[in-house]
Image (cartoon, rainbow, N blue to C red; front, side, top):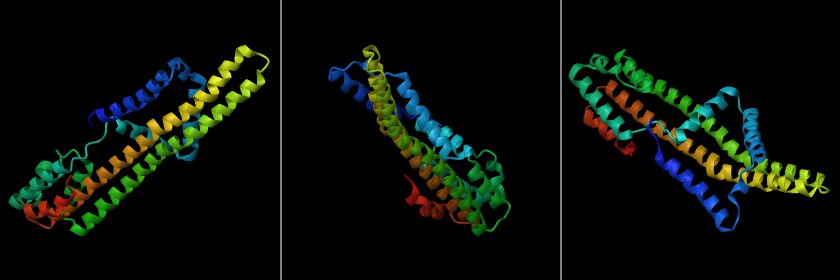
Length: 248
């Protein structure tokens, strides 16, 4: 994984625009920081997501959040180069010659395909096995991405709930003007947190995770097609021609 600076820049620009707008309108930046409001929105949103999803799916979603700043590598050009190299080796030394490189392949998915080829499995059987593995992984990861998406959906509603709770506090303390400010702050800041976190953090993060999941599926599709072609003894140039349309 490598650090994705663009995600950090986007987050800084988004939050910076909100804070700068607040400042230019004459507001106090300190007024946007309210611990009770943040607890209501974040705690409520994550709690609702935990109620919605099975624990393994929720934990997978938390792990995939790291992808926003440290996305997995999905390099279709390198994948094509690797497949061409393996095809050349198989043509030159036979399928058993791939044993020299299989342990050095970092991708477990590619390694499994190569081992099936070396074992002499039928290309159609290899293709079915790899496609089923890819589909299962994609479904699992997209399900986790939907959990992050749901957190973004719950956050604005929890912001409204925080606003209502703040207004209840205001109504209960009308006789004590010194406590009115705190209740009003919670009421409006909670709404800001809910809408802001949903649209600046969780919904964009969920969409990015979905994009990365599909990019991984494209790489796995290339590997499945290429490895099956190698198993059939295809010429390296034929392998490249079949996969060229999938290269970014």
